[in-house]
Length: 141
Image (tube, rainbow, N blue to C red; front, side, top):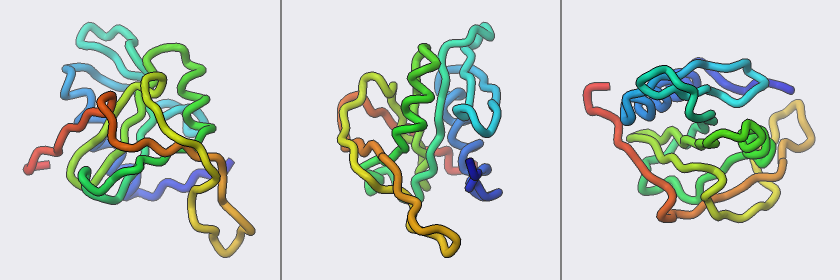
């Protein structure tokens, strides 16, 4: 498995996870690159969820449909504890519990790079719905 995250992607991911846990007064721990992204802890340091953070280089209002690889969703749900998906937009985050979201599945993904015939994979796409919440970034961050 190839890791595609750039330094800018990692900064966006860190800002998103910090915004998410600060909303609830918790903390997080980064996991192995081949695992889901984070363990989420409450204010008493109890493990309460796992999270996957996906970059979405758009503003919140233009972010839909929200894409994520089916492989990542399956890996997240296999953890059996509050599987949270967080999309890191330019102006904030959109998040939801994967098992409560409704979406559609189709082939999609990155545009092929020169070294590859196709980078398409099975993707889930989520339209705006009641189960998705958002938090805007602080203007100072």
